Image (cartoon, rainbow, N blue to C red):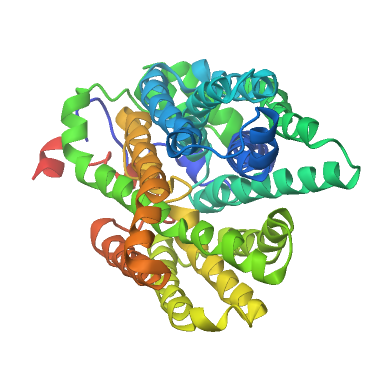
Length: 462
């Protein structure tokens, strides 16, 4: 069969798809996931050390402009990074893989030497470029190397789980420095700069990973090298398929609906998950009379990380992407309604509030492992356009995060805390409905089958 660019068999990459989970997949998961670990560390660390940062710069209270800039610049940088690396990866995944980590590492280290808050804000914009690049490259590379049966597991563990582990590491590291009575003006510099260690440390391993066989075959038209990689990864007598020579615009026109649906779902997830910031450390930690860093450690260890590991290992491939995403959104809405109803009781029953907060985090783990880990962006687009498609979904998520940071505080000021909870519950329910309607189930299917790459173009268009 012809798919606009050569022979297309039923399973073009069977040598990779039909492999059992092996050491190569684990190594790839760790190498790609360490970038997301850095993202979780860097984006969480600034909130933990904000007060000593301001004190160090002689600022008693930030203006609204400064606060918005400090929280938004990394997000804006990640949008720029996603755009840049989405395009660059069309010329080669491995060619640019490691540059994102280099940007992350250098910018993280440079934060400790910034002479003013304005310079720190600018530095975090550059750090965001590395974050955006990694959000594009790492899921694409992991998905293209993964076997069919365990693709969700490796993406979920590598991205959905590594992010909270990075956030946990930031909180534990700060707590450790505090326990040794390190001066606060030095603590924030060490905490922020330490994000460079895993980022720079992983660069060698990223450069040593083989180029994706799917990229080599479909985009680079290097069948010989693609076959060699397939045999190295798959351990079988493989033969790479022909290149996909269809025009980019033609392929994008066939898949744009699913791509923008994936972006919308990531946006919805980031909007809803902001509730954990809205009623988490700011309310519950105070009622429990514990520091926010302790609260974050307890939340990650008791709820987020166990739910992510169990969901990745047992559910995302066996139960499927859609069920855990849909039910996660729906249960998240139920918990938010419960929080709104019980709000008046939480001042006296702080442990009950902590338990409800934990249920919310467990529920949102479902969409966090799917949309929040970028799975739909890489699974719902063929190799010909995959990195650009992933950049679009990343931008959707970053827009959601930015809106959550700027819009919800205003909304809460207008309609109150309880009203904001009801609004978030409505958004969470809408996320479940949209997940049910807009995207297909992708688990246990090859990337080529999902995207109908084995079907002639005329039939796909029809």
